[in-house]
Length: 370
Image (cartoon, rainbow, N blue to C red; front, side):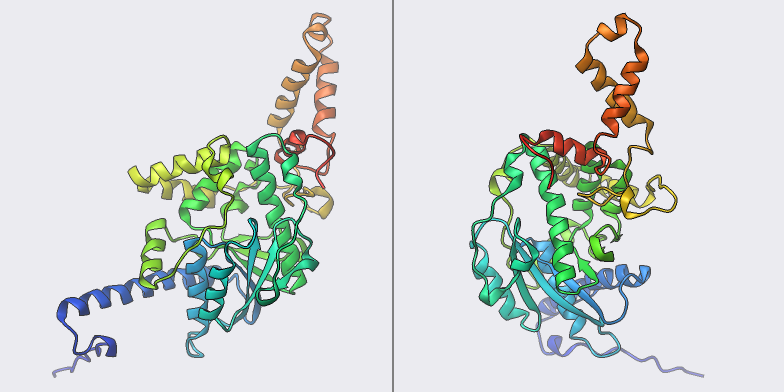
């Protein structure tokens, strides 16, 4: 018995074209299908996005954020069976004035079904405006009062997350899409450890981060894409990334964040598999948790679980600082109990902040973290 084999039909766009061009177009279509499958698989495997969820998508002008926007738009224009059933809005956080507004308007024209919103980095959520009505205003930046660039960037990141959560709550969105890719998350993992955020580093690189206020979930559906795949996708879809970062902060190497980013970028060039290994390590890290965690046991700035009762290492750090402050006089009188008591007082002085956020507060020239 002879079975007839069904031969798949060639897409219409490849019919009657030169063989070389057909092979190139087929390769592009295969790559786009492969990249979009990673996006859908990341959400589907974890079942992290419920049906008809309200989603706030973050666009910062980077190639990865435009890729995420294009993928979500494609997923919502499919037929009923393949369509990603969610309602999406787009948010752009303006950190450097009106330089990127023209690019944003072009994006809005290309992805017209989505509503675009703009807000300044240090503004209140109630100042959120639609892209068509947006006009920048002068906002006082608290982060300028920080002494070091490391603390300024760390505080800016936490402020950005807090603003995103507040805007999502204002727009009644239950989920937020962030465009972090594998190399970005590898940098974030190493940076978090260096800054003393090891207790919450698992959430910093996970697909699902539930630390935003009002039970809003932060999702990273591009976590399995690398930089090369992002560049291929940008070229295939003719996207036009635009920068939105502070040029001074990014050009300077005088911060842990920038040095770590340069280190990971160098690894990506010379030892690409090492970056993947670093990123995958984050999935295997689990923070030491307290039972019955409630809001009073979380940091008021980053919303991570407070770590001063979970780590003997932090007590040792504060003990060393107490020795440096109080000098050797106490040691000469064998008053070691006073040193330990001083260390515990320092450790619990700001009970509403985690270790890394206390370091930010120590960098403030005046006042406390708002």
